[in-house]
Length: 461
Image 1 (cartoon, rainbow, N blue to C red):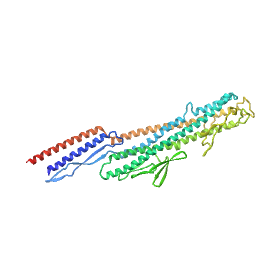
Image 2 (cartoon, rainbow, N blue to C red; image 1 turned 90 degrees about the horizontal axis):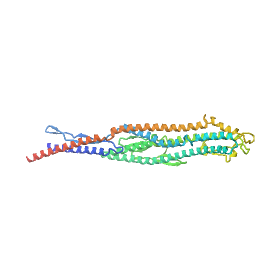
Image 3 (cartoon, rainbow, N blue to C red; image 1 turned 60 degrees about the vertical axis):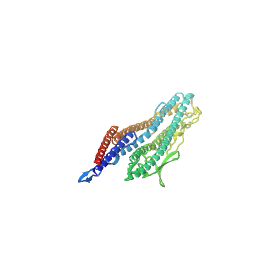
Image 4 (cartoon, rainbow, N blue to C red; image 1 turned 30 degrees about the vertical axis):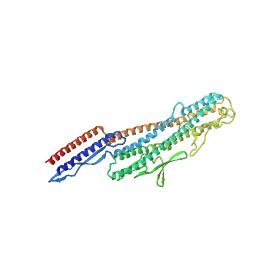
């Protein structure tokens, strides 16, 4: 009985060292696999048996193959992924907005300067046709530039809608995968089979989903993960994944979540991550910029029209509106930037003078319009200063987002390093473990060979 027990002990030594080699080999094979967590072999000693008053061991066995993870680090990784996703989603659109609302050679700021310069030049020669053409062209340039900016901002919104639509499709697919993995993990672990690889897949999906939507989640006692949006709206419960739906309402992409027979509307406050950043730009930041441009267009048109109406044109008629635009709601300036156009059709309609009748040399109204350049007629600023503030605010927003993105990248790198320390595969360590298990396997084999020789000797006796 003693030698037979020794055979079993030796066999267990072969088995556990072979399993250790397999685990180390699997770690080496997955050293570059995204989301892979290092696995470690946990061993236990088989119960001892009493034989002729002596306690004799029966060898070793594999108690489990553990996945090296840290729940706190994973939670921080998901949180920072959401922050980085939000900043990244804003980066390119903000760069485009900065291009649209810029201060360069062809910017609205220069058009405003050129406009008042043209009226100043017209005051030097109020009857000059070239000067009158320049005064009309400078107004046309302002109108076209404002229309172009609103058009480009609308195109940016369309791009954000397209990006969100693609994000939602990908998000729904990953949520369903998480639900499927929940079922597979529970099914696997209920039969005692390791689900380490499945859990790694799920953790990686959770990080990707967090980057997209800024989710929160928790693990149930049975090993399933429940996932919610930051506002608590459920996304995944057990194996069931709810679907985020998209629909076009008045040209805008609207989001909602379907849970059974219930439909829940979703907005920027519902999400984190990339979708939050996209919704904030689309629903808050860009509309605010358009509103500011509308106020500028409205204020400029009203001021110019008021002075121009008080003058007299080359035909001896009272000056008409210089600009025309469509008023909207909820404010009188709503839509002014996108609809601003030149109202005059002929240079003779320019009201250069302000007398009771037309006088070729009368430049008084030209000077009146030119003087508007330095008057604080919009929110305590001149027209040029007001636009400068808009452009400066955009530049500041871009700068702040870039700083936040750099900070989030640095934080992600630090947390990723923390994860690598806990869960990453070190080839040097795995080589040592392979050597250790190989030596153990060879020793167990030598041990069995020795027992075999002893049994052979015993049988020949």
